[in-house]
Amino acid sequence: MEFPYEAFTVTKNDNEYTVETELNSPAEIYWSASPDGFSDDHALETFTKKTVFSDPAYGIRIYFHIICGGRYYVAAARSIEAGNMLNLRDLGGYETSDGGGFVRYGQMFRSDMLCLCGEENIEKLERLRIRHVLDFRSTFDVTTKGGVYADPHLRGSSYELIQVYDDTDERFSFTFEDVVSNRESLEKAYEIIFNTYKTSVFGSPAYKKLFRYLADGSAPL
Image (tube, rainbow, N blue to C red; front, side, top):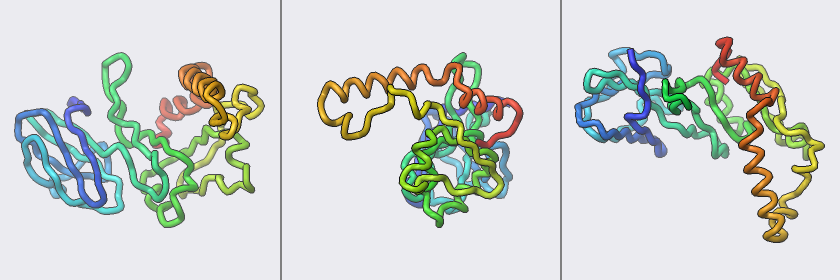
């Protein structure tokens, strides 16, 4: 069975989902709390091109299973709402670099600091069934200001601080005030960050650990 992801886009706004496609055939859509399967009693509707509907399971991360033109698709909203976290995303649905497949939904989530979610949203994060939280921040980022930026514990998951960048690396020894003080420092900071993002994934122990967890079936991360 094929699992193409790119054919349907999903966006969520408050309590409402929008699902769109450029395919012309009628599409049957089902919802599930799992990206790996669904049941017939979770059928939503049959639509063509676009549909808008209320959240069928408010507060739960859901995935849409779609049958269209004799093919099976999985789709989901990429962004996930959780308190003041503005960049919590499911990394599923992206095409692999060799063009041979797509990343499965529900296996990897990236976010800003978990402490931004607020206590009232911790349970929402726990419903993602995350098994390992890998913190790529530096030790300084986590411990500064008395540890107010430390991540809360999620039930059922382990936590590891595996910083990507060395706290003592002089390339990162500038403050926000340094960066905005003049155009030259701003351009320098941009160049450093841009080049670092391009190279940091190669030979990095932190990223090696990430992919080791994925390889041995320890997701979601």
